[in-house]
Image (tube, rainbow, N blue to C red):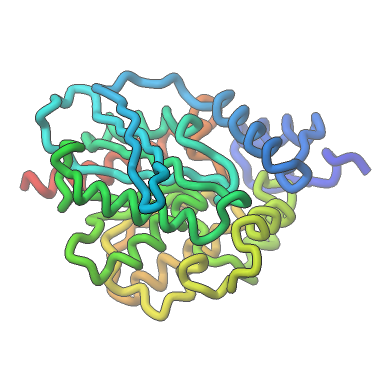
Length: 328
């Protein structure tokens, strides 16, 4: 049986653009992530992002920011200041972690999305080039995100940002890192003011229906999920809240958040369960599930209209929580 016939996604409620993307990928026999080496998977992801991302809008400035680690190496990040802002403006900051299963993805692939978030929100955006597995498995990535937050607070004047108005944001694995970092910061003096989570990974092991319903033929398949988990978590307890934040004893005390999900995503039921639990423990959460799209759609705005809508929603929500409320 051909690969095209093995994936009956035509019977599912996909948008025509999403159906076209999947049809193209599976009909040409494009290998899935778990069928590739790490280097090949990274190259494949880059090609996808660059092929289907929108045109890059102008911003006021971009600056490469080296953040020193204790071992004298540097965590690299890119700072975007929104179009129309001035050098001496003190802006809110969004610290963004890209997706990619903790193994693939990079700042360059998310350049357009971060530009759009900066311009639409009126915030500075710091996109973090955190260390990737398998070269740097857990806990390297969450350590880098915590470092990015702490360094930004300590160097707020240098960055031209307000340390009381910092959001943590990310998609997929990056959303996981944003949650984990926010949980770790609950007892600190300076905490994130907001979370923007795009189809975040909230737990490694799950038996919720969407894990099976969208296990094959919807871009992020069962085998690829396992491929990512095995490389990020060699010998690590998957019940540790630092990899599965739903396993935290409490989710109380997290900042307000916007959660964006894709309907046809194996992780969607996990995301909804996370939202429900945060709400049950007193948290403020806005949830939007985009119908007929798959995991990874957020950066594919050249092809998928829902991606443009999701980025616009993200930017508008950041503006409300970090800019408008501060001015009220």
